[in-house]
Length: 149
Image (cartoon, rainbow, N blue to C red):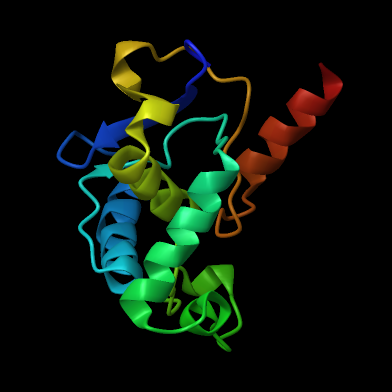
């Protein structure tokens, strides 16, 4: 938090990316555009903590409802079961963190300290293990090592 504003970090899409980030770049701008009608100029799903004001949640939800002309649940609900083996081919209808970041930066910038993550990146204490992260022997070793520390 900086001067009462929550930290909202981003990375530009055009920067060098690892394989996982390249998939994100192909997936999330399209999903956000479909759910809001707006372009996603940068990637907001880059660093924790992901904290948002309550007004941001309601505003981001309203943004989807207005664009889709439907109730939020109906606008984003998908009957397709998620199978991480099929990621990123799952028919995503919504991306919470990207939609929240987009709304926060565009509609409520006075509530957020919006910065390029590269300006103050520090080693993370967290490991990103997403619903689509393959549980490989290497990941198993990494987690086992963390549990022993």
